[in-house]
Image (tube, rainbow over all chains, first blue to last red):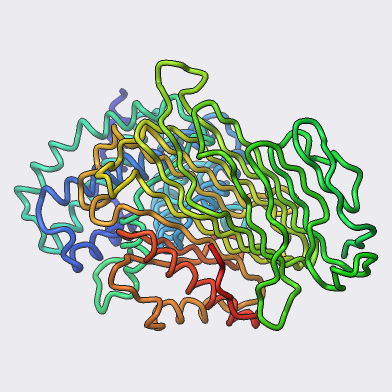
Length: 229
Length: 319
């Protein structure tokens, strides 16, 4: 990996990068308030389940295909993958948050890196040809700044993992030390998920996190909440 | 567009199944399926048992193990809606089964479709690839202004079962859909829990031009499910989904009813609702411990939908 690519990877996957994903708890806030999640082990189960049964089996599959389409300069295919992921994201809070964080990521990325591909995606969103879901935008950003598929996926998963651990920290479930230990222990899972999606195409996307889905659906009805979902 | 009933239906043997056709030449679309039914809306009738505006079975083809019940008129004071039971004469689904089913609800029809009992998905020996798994595929078309309520009984996944299920529904923008499913991960009363091998369920709901409105793909592993003993699955082992598409109905009214109606707030169930993408529809997810709790909830949601849509009250469905 070249030095500038290494730096791009660090910059894109850093939680300091303002993509808006720090406002998401992915149902964790709801489950903590209902006292279904009370310990670090519960949080670990939550992370493993959502990573393997939703993020890894759906978002990452779409991300990998969008990265390939971007490498082929196939803007129509990127639009088609975005439309498919939108139709397969059945929970409105998730669709809304993916659109918001995707557009925020695109805005910051266009300002940080000059790329005609990002400008083209921006135009598609402006004229209503794309929703601009976060995994799709992340794929095009990663590809356009020179990251390969696996490194883009790893950065995406790292961002998700640190985002949820950051939410757990702010919700008072775990402390800084336990958060770092958990991150280190989860690292092999990210590699496993990255490898699992290599042979998967869009028809292979699936998800199965019914209890977390319900937690995300009912999040808006919480009397008070810190996060968007 | 409505169908015109020309003659009293007659049963005909067709291939290895039985075809019952009133309007179309026998064999239309049905020959490649194990079950096919087409319901139409009568505009004029030579058969005095069918009145104008009534939904009737215009064509049916059934091969083993399927049969279709006669048409029941259960709505009090309104006999336009047809109530049909899909009957399965087999003890359940077995390894090697490749079952394909089709249903067409023509324009302006109203159909409630259910089955008679839970579908049992039996043990499938992994040693023989030809019978190691089963497939069940539905192709459904719902025409303009039609209403389909498809409320099957639960699907029970026995030990060593492996089932791939797919449902494709083509939905006219003006048609209504109520679709429910209940997945039971084993014979829970016998302490058989997540002993099946795998269950895949793919749903695609399409516009008439083939555009995907929304889709869902569930892959539930049994024996190898690393999360089956965590509270994410163990606390509420039954999983249910309800898909509702209602053009021209304010979904907020239904969402408000779901949140505030005491009958729809069971302490035994975990529920959540969300608007669906690309249509005026709602997804309701339900988890529970007992089938009867979930079935009662589904009936109450359908009753609520009927009321909000100014449709006849949901009657008792004899089982």
